[in-house]
Image (cartoon, rainbow, N blue to C red):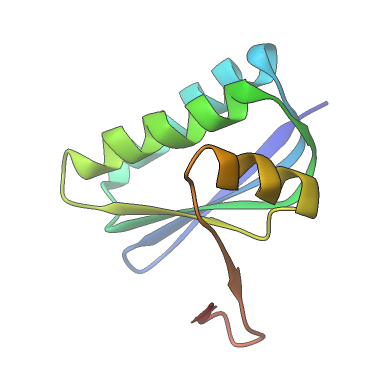
Amino acid sequence: MTQVEIRQQGDTMTACIAGEIDHHWAAQLRAQIDERARAAAPARLVLDFSAVTFMDSSGVGLILGRHRLVRTWGGSVAVQHAPPGIRRMLAIAGIEAQETDEEGGDRT
């Protein structure tokens, strides 16, 4: 079962996704994330993939669609903590996955 926990701190909304992201689950994740994002209009939406166990091309669509949505109000999207296999898929799709240091700041 795939789940998403969404929390907001200041102008950053974080969606922690756990489980698989395939066609079926991507649609459900999209609905949950979009509902909260539209209500809050965060300056930054972070998609935390640390607990994602599988992702197909639907996950790429999930990321790109959230980018288009958040961009409508001038925000940005970041993907963080993607497992190595998913990082490779994202790199092929031209999506950069970020890592964070222990304090939560971005590192390259």
